Image (cartoon, rainbow, N blue to C red):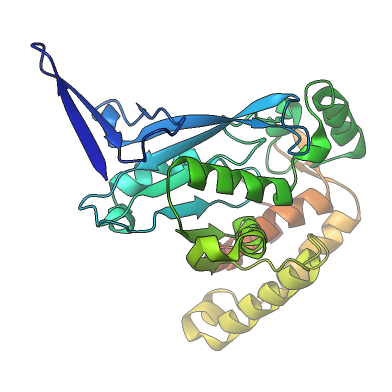
Length: 307
């Protein structure tokens, strides 16, 4: 909900999201260049260690996309992104265009989870610069990143449980009794943790790509990927057009893996091993569009075309 104040002879108009008086939140325009006021951003100072409120403080960044036709008392929609690592506030522009229905009559709130986005980000630049077919998270790289980050942060304080407490601080600061939640992948775990922590504060929740609290990531990734792969092969076999175009898909796949078992394959300027290659394909399999593209990818790779 918007509140606007016209000040003095200069006709200066200041608009803010309607939040209770006395709150420490100062929301400033942060939308796209053509409409800076379309999104409002703010931040809260929170203790890095909740048990030490007078200890080191970090800034918790969030964005509010205001309702198009505000409905009094409507619970705002909090967006919990996946990863963990995706900054929710970076998706604000979506709610100004194709996602505008989400904010038809209530605000959308995008909180950068601590350690992500602009909420005291914990980043590993060397790992972020890797290509999709390079080895990910080698022991040496992870240890080096950890050693660097431990110089600036207490890494034990960047857990899902503590992040759930941060969400409630933002809810309280914005003056809402209850919130709705839309969550994706890892965000569903954060949503469940918050619901367990403060059940009375959640009016409703949508969980997409559900990750239960007892799910031991990434224990089941390989088995799940194999099942999807088998289903793609089966679906292609049962679809006349697909089976006619890719009649030897499973044999081509098995032959491709045998080639990788003989050692890394030269792709461009690098030698790519089986692990990074199949992990890249596993990522593709998480999307329907990637599943549809897989037969073509396998057939071209089996013929020696990895581009």
